[in-house]
Length: 345
Ligand SMILES: CSC[C@@H](O)[C@@H](O)C(=O)COP(=O)(O)O
Image (tube, rainbow, N blue to C red; front, top):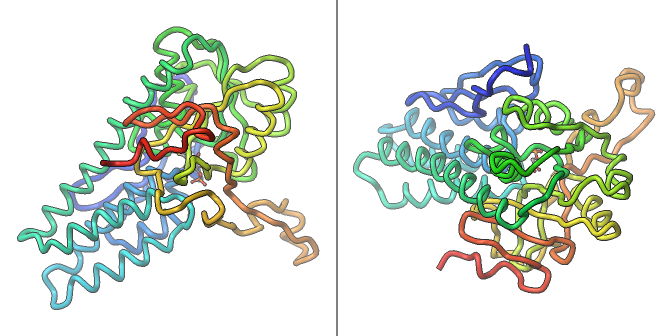
């Protein structure tokens, strides 16, 4: 596949009766969609990371609830069958709060006993999807305003169209900066061990003709020391009330390095990423994934000789973050101010 091909792929496509999920494990070599007709399939698609990225898994889960209602309504006790599916969806991944936020919204709607539940749930899932895209565009503009004339930025993981309803959070800011003609280069960490940066981010940026340079995660300190980047821009999986941010493993190390080198750190995330029930990041559950994602094949083949520790998120203290950008507004220096000003009224 040519990298100059225009981006026409979306992580999720709702057909009205099924959910098509782009299998991100196969990118960039292969663009293939799997089609799901029930919540169990969507749960598996999230757990296996066919679809990944905090907003995208929330949207997928919302459609999963619609598929559940389509399967069970109007059987006797259909509501408890849907509730069981919601619980299954909620168990797919633990860290991104957008998943639980979307499921709660769907559950609250069900509790209102709508006269036509399938139509009502479909409308809500489509709304969650559309609002995420709109939020990304809004925070893209806000983030670009904050950054002003930065020439080069570094991003981590993939917080792009592939991780959201479309446009992206961190990559949304980058897209908006690029449209303004200010950005000369985007450095992308490869993001070990799953390689979201190498497989997804540089590919996604290439589709849009945005100059991107891949670096090994371990090159980030030297990149900053060399004065090559002005800002680090990342997404988030959960933001606590004091502004602590859970995001892809390695974000914390970048923020520590940024402090040493006078580089600023921006977190761009929709409001659905906030968890005001958590005072700080200490209580955020950090997903541990299978060590097999980390271990080279030769170790896998010779049994259990070597163990691996594979936490896939970390928490960056608010004090290391220069700005948190949402569709509702921006907090500069969240370590001083917290993020309660961004809470819904
Ligand atoms: C807009 S996506 C923000 C985050 O979800 C992203 O940075 C991230 O950590 C994704 O992790 P992943 O394990 O690929 O789901």
